[in-house]
Amino acid sequence: MPFFPPHGRFALTPAVSLSLVFALSACGGGEDSAEASAPSEGAAEETTAAEGTPPEELSQEELTGLLVEAPVPASRPQVDESALPAEPDASASVSERAAWSLLTEVSRKASHVDPGAAAACPEMTEPVEPGHNCTLTYGGLDMQFPVLGAEGGGAFRFDYPELPTVREVVEDTIRFDHGVEAVYCDMDDVVAVEPGAERAPYLCYARDGGVAGSDSPEDAVSPYEVYVLIGGTLATYRYLSEG
Image (cartoon, rainbow, N blue to C red; front, side):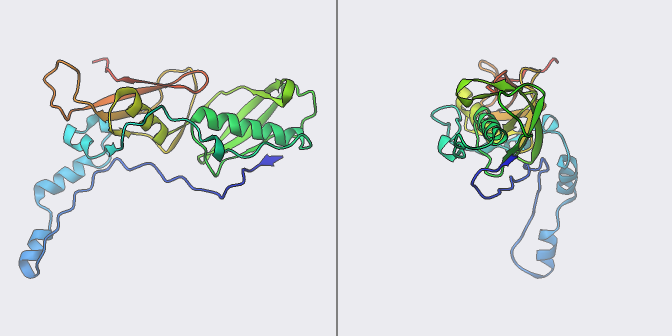
């Protein structure tokens, strides 16, 4: 039985494009206006070179244009418990209670409530035995979570082969962990990552002044890597390439 939280559906916006758009405009009219509004040959070449370029290949100036300014939060991101759906009462079916438990636990691990998320579990009987898979739609992603069983008090246990990570949560985690304000993560709004595996399949960038003691300018932008630990906790580090 599917479990939908009592919220309206909310479509998460797509990730910010990596393309940099250069626009030239001019005031006035006539021939001078037309000439002023036409991009120079150099500017056109710069636009073409930047479009579709991976962030790791962009210049410091181009990376700066991607950064999003926000205050350093007072704590690491945490889920807003008041935004979670109300727990079904004891008279609800086992599948409905399991679906609520899955939706709630994944939202807590992601440190974010997606108002459009929904969970569904197959018909089950108590005592709950392994062998069932529940489906969770979160941030537009469909994920499967095997049911491991149920404990006393109605708590359900699941295996979490993947967990969603939310871009705004990752960016605020980097802000808090490293005391930086300008951050950008090269990822979709929501990405499914295997917890405990190697670093997440994206890099983030922050204006942090570069490595301490180096001759980097104060506004230097550095890359950061992210790991999703068992349980969903994020670990963020300045990225040091093998080269």
